[in-house]
Length: 196
Image (cartoon, rainbow, N blue to C red):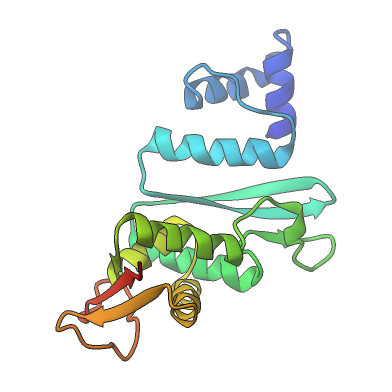
């Protein structure tokens, strides 16, 4: 779609692109999208879909057909469980970043994308824990999904932060928990507090 959208936006006489131009105009509320490259265009479409459709969860899987030639498979859902399952499928395809699949090389090529890596996610989650002055296991679970990471990735963050003495974990009774229980609506409530 990127190729046709760029032509439709730049060439008023391109009759075959009128439906794409109409779609882009409606999606972007008559603003012009960033069409400098396919990845930027796909990221922009992803962001606009979330606003336009009003759905809670929107994500994309990049499929690289040839070098710098991408297809995008978009996923929309208001179901937290459905989104979680979709993320599991993506991360099983791309264990490094949960973002892409390369058809031409039959291998993942994560370096092509400006995606969130695990180190950056650790920083984001820790920053959120500090900003909120602590989070529950449910809040960490939800934050992970909102940032396209699975519970197993979210579990690694408190593990690392505990080793660095940056957080403390507590149960509702104030004791040390046996686990994180990073599942949706788990009966055990764990508090993850920053150490000042």
